[in-house]
Length: 335
Image 1: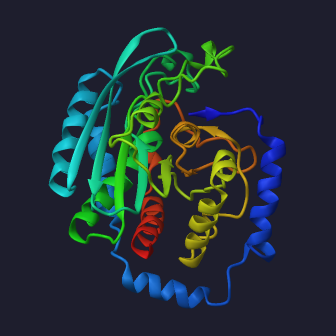
Image 2: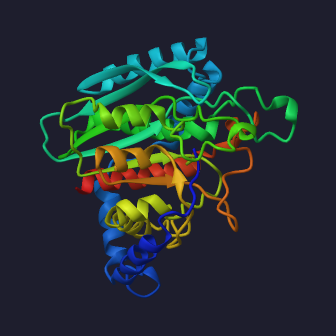
């Protein structure tokens, strides 16, 4: 994914003023916050950080999941075999998309459906592919090497795999659709991005799904995208497009995080605009969707090893997976 220029600045300032005024002074929640926190933690399934981390490690063990590679093929097969055990229905979307270099790529979106008869549905997503270009690596000779993709991709998927396992044991009242997007990170290398801002070469799998959902006329009452959620001491700012398209969902999620004692990780602070999978789900599919994504302090940049060959398991902290997974479980089972 990449930062987007501030084309929406004026309208988002208005949305942001409305949003933050609704939160009360300093974004504080109401006086029963402590009681809510106790009730939530007593009634919600427990998220296993160790299990989620094991799913992250499994992806890394395959190698970089660059589309078309052996690692990509074997990892997709593993996803399918695991999710078939847990989900009510598995849907595989095989598709083709044209990359920045005009190459036609084969992609594979993987959808796991839980409680399919429920009309009220929540969509959770992350991308499972690895970037083929370590174009932000400090060593130029690594710029055309593949990124391991531990935090950028595998961390979000690891959280969703653990949630899928839990959903299989305790069905929620709502329907949940877990979508693993492919071809998210096949955008042009940094040295070829001069004139590509107007071209949608990122998020190819989410663009396809948004135009061709796994079920005809599919609707979810909202969606949540996870990206780079495993970094130690995460800082999940309120991403710009999330506030623009779905401020009410941002408020819902950040309030839940605060109720659970995670306000230091989910600060009431706006971040930059990120062209990520949620952008296309909002723009094309019209499903209000937010992005839970880590942004570094000060400059809204990504984590240190983003798009480098060092985005390995050292980039992932099980505690961070636990924070995000716990917030999601409380949302799911509180609806």
